[in-house]
Length: 90
Image 1 (tube, helix red, strand yellow):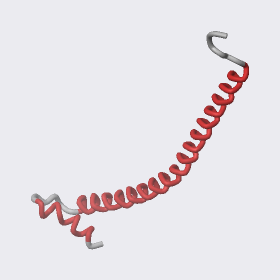
Image 2: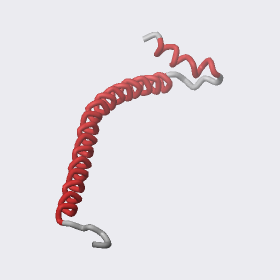
Image 3: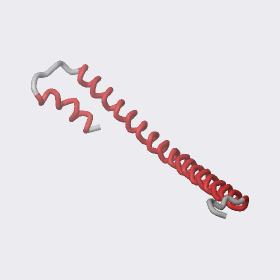
Image 4: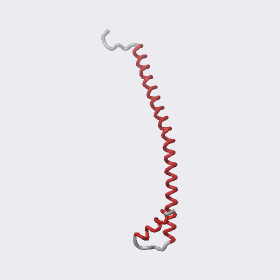
């Protein structure tokens, strides 16, 4: 009996090994999906914090713009710093 020994049992063994590898890959990908879903909640929390900071900054910029619009244009850095100094005192 020269040549390759391809028996039915070897073929079945190869199929079982390939199936095991396939199932392992599926379980690894499912774990990756679970990790990604848990990361989404952390990102959502960070986005909510960022949104609150942007709203706060928008309020400050709007107030500064209103203060600057209420005062006459003043030349120089001292005139530009006055609304900011007023806002810092709030």
